[in-house]
Amino acid sequence: MPTVYVCLWFDTEDFIAPIADDAARDVAQVMTGEGVPGTFKLVGEKARSLERRDRWDAISALGRHDIGYHTNYHSIHPTITEYVRGLGWDEGASEFERREESGLRDLERIFCTEISCYGQPGGAWAPQAFPALKKWGLIYVDEGDNIGFREEPFWYCNTLTVFRLHWNCHRADLWGSDAEYGSSLERFDEIYNRLSRTGGLISIFYHPTEFVHAEFWDCVNYRHGINIDPKDWKMPRQRSEDEARTGYERFRHYLRHILSKPEAQVVTAAELPDLYPDLAAGHLFTAADIAAISRQCPSGIRELEAGPGFLSPAEQFALLSGFLRQRGVGSVSLRQPLGPKERILTTRLPLEVSIEAFMDAAGRAEQCLELAGHLPDQVAMAGTSVAPAEMMLGMAQVCEALIHTGQLPGEITLRPADFQMESYAEDSDHLWDWMIFAEDFTAPRVVELTRLQTWTLKPARLAL
Ligand SMILES: [Zn+2]
Image 1 (spheres, rainbow, N blue to C red):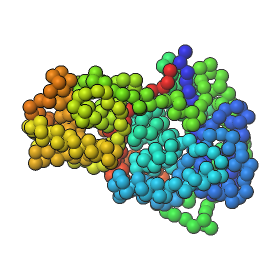
Image 2: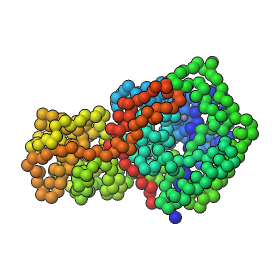
Image 3: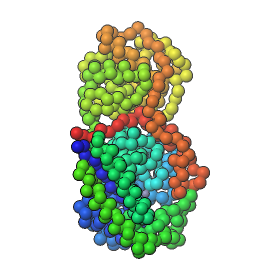
Image 4: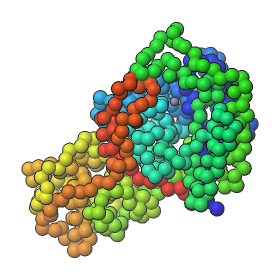
């Protein structure tokens, strides 16, 4: 029977209420007591406040588990999306790194450990976070609607990403009625039974502060774009002692329920990279693989299973480009560029170009891959500019000719390409209805950049 992996993660963020420090300690101790490893994603300011308040009991209880990162200041404005929303790709990526790195280093210092993963605060998604995460060696673990791939982990911007697991995401209703708690366990069983046929991952998340509070610390202090001076902090409404006790009892029972499933295995975020290796990375791709990419392109540019794993469209683009650079001779090693940074449409189509003009343009696209590590936004050719999707379709034509005839074709005709990955990124106003954002907040540029980077999207396959 395939294994059903279960990852429990806890956004540990409330740096306002000291009682939330107790909750972080107590949740970690319940996990330890049941022998269940968890991933506690801490906010930098939370870790520093534990240190300032001398809460070494909480730090040592949390430190028995996997530690992830949950931004430097969480809901203090500007939040992540707020500070990148007006920025382009490079500027946003630099700003994220500049503001967030010190919190990560504080976690490493306070917990004396490597940090495994990152997840955004609330709805504060930003694709510009990914270059820094890759550099820091963190995977993405969170839940939201901005992007997803068939309710399973996926690769995005060359980072393993657990996001929008949706039907495979579960939370037992620890504070509802007995009937509600019971039916939430039935829903866990449904997920478990479904995934035990194929193998897969169940994502479970809580916030330690929820175990002692009936409302969120940030909703009472940082709601709708407002910042508040720490001396004016309001404490969130606490749960009654009975309610809190029931929550902990049910949590323990929930853990035992998970452990009672014969094929369930609890894993931390730190273990996920070994469970979901990128088998395509480092692989050499043959002419037969290039032919498979070239054949798929006319029916739509999308992920492709080739060689030992999956290829994103950006990886396929780089393989075609490498094959052309080698004039169809030998195998091509995989490169993993980012997607384009701007959307520029090809306006003159169909476009007939000589092979000399096309290969010259392909050489410049190749330079962009090699020197900048991303797909070009556009490639100048025959007095116009060609977007990456049409360029890729043209490269596929030339690669096919090289494979079948050993020769470059005389001229090629560029036609509209069908890039099919953008539908995996959602574009809707409800993405921004997190209570911390201003009521009319939107971030169209963030959505646009998220969509452009779907060039890097591909499924993550569970290791056998
Ligand atoms: Zn959070």
